[in-house]
Length: 353
Ligand code: IPM
Ligand code: MN
Image (cartoon, protein in one colour):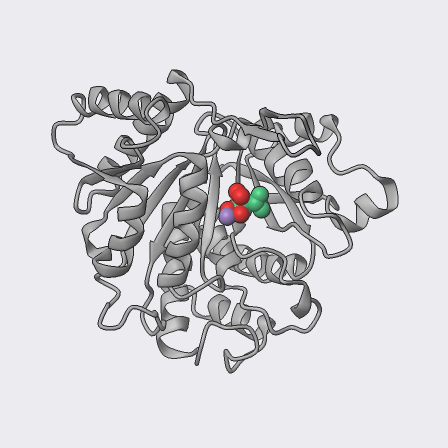
């Protein structure tokens, strides 16, 4: 008897529910092909619920999520809610509360997808960013001094712990080994200016590297990484970096792989429950129009299947996505795909093998 996966679904805000629906359609189809079982439980956390109850995510929800094998998230963010409330109260609370200390973001140009990088082909753009997801500038530590006066100072602390940095770096080494492509891991930092944080990162990186002699290591400052991501993305295999730099370079990564219509991410707790999401946000202006691209959510589903150990199913989802980008869609942009949201989901589902 195969295992029944327990999957929590948070469709969330804006176009979240529309794209999650397409992801779940693909899940249903691929589970039949691969022969695994799953149970879904839907949660209504997000803007609507917050506006009604003034509660974003109760602590009891965190406890409940711990009983699942994975969480599938649509999007958070709504123009009616002050920026930061849902992002911090829902997304970051889940990432921190469930100790999802890795944010995994593949940057892969699929066949037929337009990239703003002229002359770059799918074989040139294929790397993964391992972003630390529980520390750095995201910890919310800091203070105002003399707030509201001309002498005001605002401090925002970047917290980097040896434990947090090391588990992230070791995850990145293991990941590079398993990925088995160029076997190259690049540390993306800023050792020339941020001399406390990046000293710790660099020492930890060099020590861990000794345990992975087969992996080529490299270091680049974050500004240079941005430059090389545009000029020579083929240099990268796996990048490891902190929370803030990772946030920034993965949006650049999303653009060179074809945009928010395709970019997905996984918030990973290797020993606990991980959460998978399209990284494009809730795209409020497209809500309910059936025009948004569901491929990012479907790619998030693929990542979830890999994390669950259903590699065959994950691969068949990825193959089908590549078939659809290569042979069917005119563009990845909302409204310009040549198909509706549900039709794109249908194409992926029909072409699963
Ligand atoms: C992301 C997003 C989030 C982040 C926001 C919504 C808090 O930009 O997942 O990259 O900064 O991590
Ligand atoms: Mn971001």
